[in-house]
Image (cartoon, rainbow, N blue to C red; front, side, top):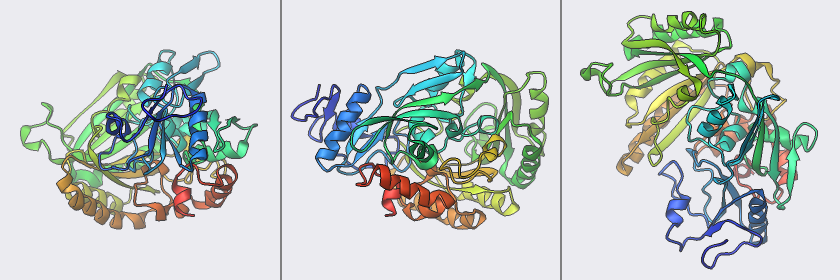
Length: 455
């Protein structure tokens, strides 16, 4: 039922308004820097509630915004004066182990999806933060450690249930509403609200082989040159994330190195356990390794590796590019960047691409770049509001040096709140087609998003 004086026709969930005591808690997302206030929050119990909420938004001239995990650096789910449609209760996951498919509710988080599919020794490409919503990750493309082997999350999406701007509910797949299905795969959630995702799964785990190696920052050029050669020769069973970061205060590192900048190589191998350790071992043998190991590990546990690196309630600001190669200029920029950007949660990471990702034609989905070998992200994170201005300026200065090393396309999920100008170039040759789909399915701009910001 609806709370207090707020009411949405045919709605079975809770409706929370600005005057309700739980409003501030209910609206808050992952990034504490985002302080926008929606007009109402509709906590949905099911897809029918989503339909009712969208109809209410249309009747009252409001924008409707879906939220799954709220794990967005730009605070995409928080739009001033909007109707925030909270999908957190849509948690149903149905796994068909024989067909290797999963039907996943719009409120499911990545950690929950991994846990449900790994019961059957199956998985789909997911990100690296278990609290990320499946919806946000997938609609932006979906990069993760399995992407070189299985492709992006959208490459494994076989269908979706979508609530449109008029409040109707449709199926989108290769046969029904194929243009909408195309746009959802990399174009974000600005075409409708997805209440269910249907994924093709693949055998993975339950146990995989992982590698961790930590190197001093002054060896970054040598290590990253090796990484470039290593990944060009690696099988697609290898997933890798190099991260420029600060050494954690763990017993594995001398106390005098705690908090010092370093380069970490985090990798997984889903192949045969007899072969995988041998293929990952060279990652520990470049120059002077401060600490490293190769070990078997449950996939579902490895997926939690970054769980505490950017906690909810921190303050975050990001920039990112796609990169074709690990050039010395790129490596120098990243090494200098981690030393220049303050913040206890700050890191600069690279997601290795290629493999199955590059085998999909750029026009097959809305995702803009199938040829880059790395997705580079500057993720600045800190706690104190007094540091906002200095850290944001430091990130922008590093990005100024980084941007010329990119082709201009950008991963939608890493766009921050001040980057609307990057959207047309960011979608590359798919931009015009995305605008056309937006105009067809959401002509009044009921669902805000990057395309709405550039009209």
